[in-house]
Amino acid sequence: MPAVSHVGVVGAGFAGAAAAILLAEGGVEVDLFDAKPEVSALGSGITIQGNACRILDQLGVWEQVQENSYPFDILGLRAPDPEGSVIAVIPDAKMGGEDYPATIGMYRPDLAAILVERAEKAGVRLHWGAKVDSLRQDETGVDLEWIEGATRRTGRFDLVIGADGLHSAVRELIGIDARPQQNGMGIWRAFVPRPEQVTHTDLVYGGPCYIAGYCPTGPDRMYAYLVEEAQDRTVLSPEEQLATMRTLAAGYHGPWDEVRASLGADSRINYTWFTRHLIDGPWNRGRVVVIGDAAHSCPPTMAQGAAMSLEDAVVLAEILLASEGLDSSVWAEFQDRRLPRLREVVDASSQLADWLIAHERDADVPGLMRRVAMTVSQPA
Image (cartoon, rainbow, N blue to C red):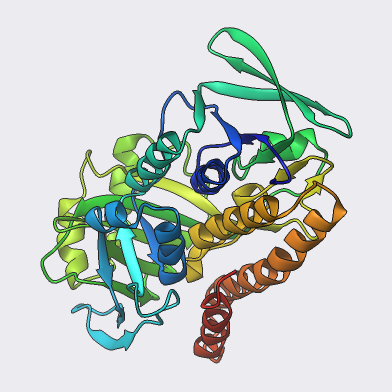
């Protein structure tokens, strides 16, 4: 018998949906709550490394993901010169093994919808527009309260998993004082037509931004991004956002000339700040645990955010399904398997960002990335 028979998962993002799928497939009754009225995800695109692809296969969605993504095995570096000159094309590490591409690009809401649909097929009960605002626990379970529509509802669970993102309500409810800290970088993202010459990610370091890059997400589309010094961009109108991104993009050439010309009102432009945090200790308080962005975040300089969230779900579900009770040994094993790995990824991702901010030219970037790749290539 698994350690739990009825679990409430708060947050239908990557970590929450994955945990719900795996637990439901293991015979656990699962209710999945999300404050949004329907499945959605912020942003235009996402870069997914091979170790995350391996987990998506484990979740039973790899075929759908392949149909809705763009794979590639190389990384390009370009110069911030008038031609957008290619400096190097580098084979990318296959961190999921030879059965998976090194990297895929995907429209982020598509992946969110695929995971939620898979959760429904696994028997998970979905509660949209459900805002969790209270919980009480004792030695045998957790009483959860939420508002669904205009109705206040309650339920009792053996375990509650808080996978409700950076600004997690569950994390706050259980008194874990860990908040995402801004690292000084902000990123513009846009969803645009894919120029025919773009068949993989190219990165440009320097110019008006720290980084300019793009990632193909399908035969005709890709997302482009510009990483700048963090600023308060909330005051900008949609038209001003578009004008700002066009101005910054004017400093880059090659495929960026087409990207800049294609930016328009339908480009789904958004702007967010990079953050860093890691709960440096137990992620649970009694029978409530947080995972994914609720427990950790880091700049996307190594494109490991989604992978780390999915890994949290895999490891937690594996331990719960193999354990006979929800005791301290469960949480000790979970922390032993997650915290050192997350610390390495968060520290490395943050270090890369810090080097860019400091314009550090002598940093051992290849060595740092190689060390992390060797770690995450091993299943969590």
